[in-house]
Length: 313
Ligand code: AKB
Image (cartoon, rainbow, N blue to C red; front, side, top):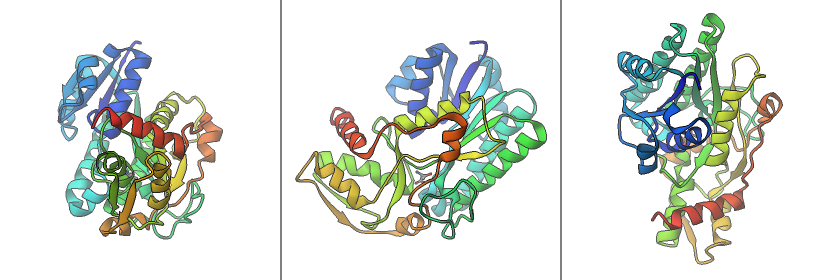
């Protein structure tokens, strides 16, 4: 490899697994992890790590130059729930981090960027079933507004300055190596911890709230695939789907493995966010452009989560 890869936000839910997979593909020394906090043992021990504050363009530039990095995965964001509690902070972090990276690419220092968007760009007026790539996009959350603005800025830098930026609208992501933080879809991870520890879970969403979800392995595959894709539509943030379920359906899938597991419902303000998001996603453009296909279904995901967490908690 002539140049190296930087993951910013490598201690987060996606960043952790992305670093490990990229290191498998490109070699440990070629993938630099960075975050403002330490990562898990596997990330810290398997290759280079830099403490990095993404709001400082000078610090990012220094790390890029030190390691001769040309490709950046910017995995930093304040998610939907925390963003509602602190709109200004979420806007500042979500947007300034993106501008720093886009500007470094515009200046020719970075050659290729991955930036994550989310199903949160969609809002209450968006068709909920099989939500198309191009549709009514009027988010009603702080996080969704920042993601939609980010998508538009990526398109602007791509068209105006030729910046190569790739993006995906992630659904809720389910994984066991690192916990998510501050998202509306987090219940779908929390439920597994409680199923193992207490055999019961009180859900903060209503029982029939269906949301699009995906197992982390598929999300990581998609992320790497879109970065490697040769045939792309002009800049878009790709819709991506795998499976959809409600808390009740997830609980039923867990009960197949742990029959005594019980679920209760105590919806809170997160329900208000969830009800504005799609239930299922039309990802035919990702399928056409770079052969995207999810591999893990709901039952497989449940088995993998229970086995994976069994040894961790
Ligand atoms: C959240 O719930 O905020 C995130 C997302 C769907 O982007 N997981």
